[in-house]
Length: 83
Image (cartoon, rainbow, N blue to C red; front, side, top):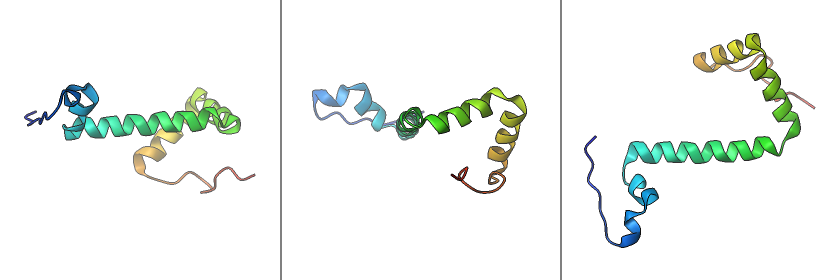
């Protein structure tokens, strides 16, 4: 991958700043940050964490979820689990 990096100060040599200059790496960092934010939200939501754990530990549910994600389909019912 060919890139052109610009360094105007010593801080620009920081790995995070270098990564921000390379678009594919920047997108991965952004995705990583979004996943970290999601993990934090999940950890503070016990009901959601239990539901995800149950889904991931059940092979049939896991395969169904994977198929839905691959097809872009909405989950059955189209609701948020309704309370």
